[in-house]
Length: 353
Ligand code: SF4
Image 1 (cartoon, rainbow, N blue to C red):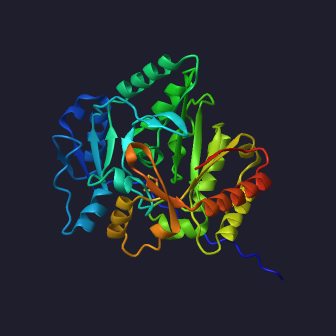
Image 2: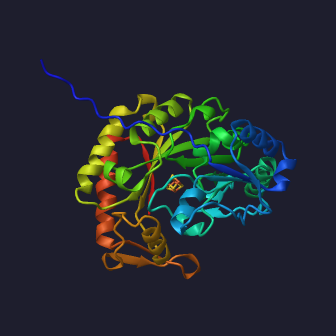
Image 3: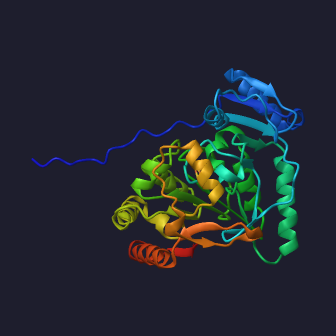
């Protein structure tokens, strides 16, 4: 009698709980700050005060590497003072700052460099002020639609069970005729968001990749199968759904790896999830600074960052990055787009960059 071999399931990761928490004194004047203080006291998490969320001292660790790892398990509760939002092309007009930092250990993540020596996770309690500011940006552009990206500086789903800020933001946008929200996640902990009154104005995206990339470069994030299962729940909750395939990475056998990814995605997604679907494609890139930081933090990483094999692309403020050479990038784009058209004929490919 033939036996069926089930795909082995890597046990999912638990929702993040920090090893220690720092509070800015001002944070305790906001309801969310008070609530979080209560939460962590009840859990017995070590709590410290810090004068500013930009300068947290006293994260334990003998070496730089240990300090870095401990920082990724440290939560800082603060007040967001800068209410000027950054731009967030090509996926949205503005980045909405709900949190900064992430507990994931993706080797290639650009937060490695943008957060420099502050890899701890900051959450902001003045959510009402942040949303009011978003409202002003929406008004300025009316009758145009204004899109906000909530995952530029963190993975907001991964910490949602702690703050509830993403749900507040989703429900706020649900009431804005001219406002839209989008974010992306590598975490499957979507339960707290499933009953949010989104009104179809939030696009919930999952970051996915070929097995090789997830296994080698994305420690401390949810496994692929958990992400897809979560995507199904999100689609059932009526959210417009999307996927970001990033970084598109040319490993040995990448064509097969990505074909396998999209075949599995098609087979596993419920039909309703395929009706209004978007894909965003981002090829792997790195800067010289990122390369140094990654080599120091993940010394055994297999991530290829050979400048000679790449092409330099100038960016804003003279800061450029290394992307694949033209021909290789074109091949990557054409191959993946072809596969997408085959597996998801009704989906929209928003961009390749
Ligand atoms: Fe960076 Fe996203 Fe990985 Fe977090 S989950 S480390 S934000 S790439």
